[in-house]
Image 1: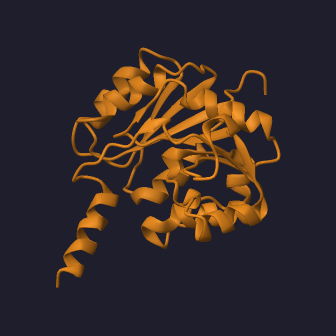
Image 2: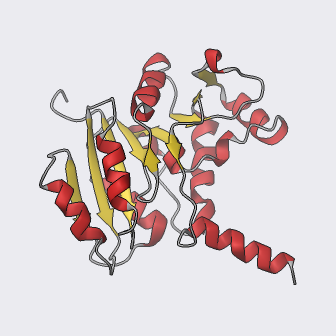
Length: 226
């Protein structure tokens, strides 16, 4: 175990040649160094893989895998987890930017509350920054999410860090229900384990027309206008 990385950063990619270099460099600039960066490409047709492999030859923490067939978003996320060796899983999308202290803040929070199954960015209106990290019981997670305006269970994979054994115990992401699979996993985790909340400025979520999320939002807007 001593030789294994503490954190597996899992970066899934599909046609992200415009953004992936910046995403990789942001992870490699982390103040916390005990990690592996696993990039799992889902059959890109652009230069994404070539760009990723150029970092693999420069930094031995980077490993690139290319799927034989397209697995789609959550199938690919589960595939990435299957390669991991870390005690913690930190998903990070290939079009976002991780801030330097992101891993350090999340690992420290999990170390402070080892009973937790996941750490997540929180927008709790009742908690000031000096009270974070904060441990939420399962009951508190659901009450905060549904009644107190703290939508912590909607935090996407980039905003969370999972204990790998908890992720595996609960079966990872459901590959059949689409874009809400990440929310379902959060519901399942906090039904069984406490959650640690940390501040919500640990990465930059880039918004662009190529995102699955933005595509869905555009579809909802179109439906509302009918």
